Amino acid sequence: MPEVERYSAYDRFAWVYNQHWGDFGERVMPRLQELLLNHLPEAAQILDLCCGTGQLAAALAARGYAVTGIDGSAEMLRYARENAPGATFVLADAREVNMPASCHAVISTFDSLNHLLTLDDLTMAFRCAQVALYDGGWFLFDLNMEPGYQARWRGSFAIVADDHVAAITNRYDAAARMGYFKATLFFPDGDHWQRSDLVLTQRAYRLDEVHAALEAAGFQGIEAFPDGEGTALHAAERLFFRARTLRERHP
Image 1 (cartoon, rainbow, N blue to C red):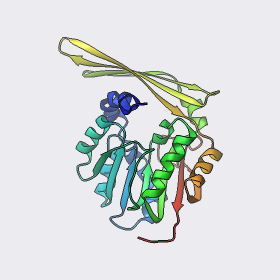
Image 2: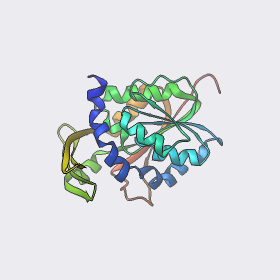
Image 3: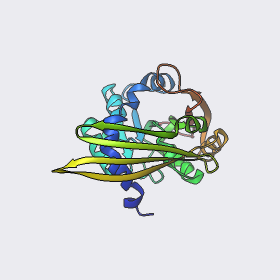
């Protein structure tokens, strides 16, 4: 599927995401500190895979890390460059990233990798992350797990403001293990309001599938952790996965 079709919905959603969902990285920063940042050297090189609108990249850069963010949505990256001027951003598909081994860590948060809809796609993204890491480098990412879709991906809600309206409907198809996030957006355009409709789709992966994909990509020491206390998320609904790459050479 051409890139413009694959990511056009994310481009249309970027403004609303930046306004209402971009703070996820700061909300889970204590967990990231515990699971990853405490293990990295000062000024470590971090790749933020599927970086969205860059708020996490900004938080990491503010802590002295050298951050490169990658996302497949040009509009998401436009906001990311505004939010994190101290980071570097690259427009690329997570399944096709081609970076030399130059990172101490790769991170991907806020169920970004659930947007990859097949196990082959997920494995491809894992392989790209593995190639980008130094020997001994860390890969940390979170995924929405099926209990999260079952508990939360049902029903509707709306965001109403003077300059925009967003009507959101979530639905989970348990048989297909697919979640559908449907948004109808309205923005003022002169004397009228402009409407935009989009659907974002996610896949629920089983724990054994994630482990197998990480192993196939060359990762070792695979661990899974609950989200942890101090956030609005529930442990059974979201997991953090941590793995390392081990080769014959060192940076």
